[in-house]
Length: 439
Image (cartoon, rainbow, N blue to C red):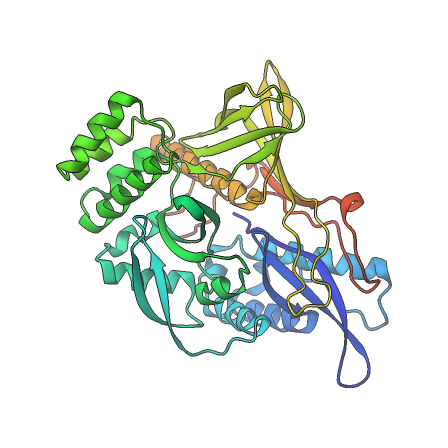
């Protein structure tokens, strides 16, 4: 599956010889990931080709004359497509030449040296586990370290992930993003710029039935048990009164297996809930609370007359979706040159025999997109298990593998900035039509 890489902005910088070069700001899941020059990416591509040959996506060619604005836009679009496409090859993703370069540019973007550091990883019940790491350790490595410390079986790592989580007042939390395996948690945490942001460990699957795969590992059961309790307390999962009473009795008995068995019957159990947002259904400007999981998108919508309506969209009837950036450029003179996070996600849904677009305005649009991708991959894995003759090669938990169905695979998702709503303050700041098509 493609990764949510985009290069929405670039800058012209003076070099040591009196000339100028272009610095590209690369964003991952809506957060600034690194800043790189074309020459850095070009050398990286050459290193990758020495290892993987010509199977890599095409890399933008060099220009030996001064670039026009249209040429600069085209190059940025091509670099973005390259970053998105090169991450589709699982062999590339797991290679040292891939991760070593991304480590370097992440550290360099925020002027962080490689050194020993302590990092607190927060568990679902609010407790934290402190691990000793290097600032250059990837999320995959940090997950291995923390799992070893809490006794989580190594073969179950793929069912869990590290997330940037913002802890708000009154015990509320917001999941900002899931950290990609090649991201550096120490760097991502320092660069998040959000107050009360922490790195948290949570399960990373959207089908509650997958709980059954973890029941033989005590540490895994403890984690999903703690998360289930937390989700019920924060009203992400919504038991009936009878279910709540029975769950409380099982919790007092510390009967974790029976608690989880009953919890899987609770509405929205195992779902990711977004912060309150705005949607355009059934009319523009409606407030909404969205939960994603268990093969569906559930929305509690508040109408302008204050009445509420519960709507459920089944993933089997979702055709595609796209994320669009709507914001303005912020911090024009600052070191990080950040972007505002005004985003929308729209998905096309079959209702009444026709396709309709449902639009959600949320800062968590990329997280929502990641959850939708996860549900699609889990559905494909289930289909492959039920229909071996389809010969669909699906990812093992925690390990990416390429699907063997490229000819029939849909283009589910994309990323598009909305040009007429983007404002810039400098002539040397370039925006482009950045698209991420496919998964």
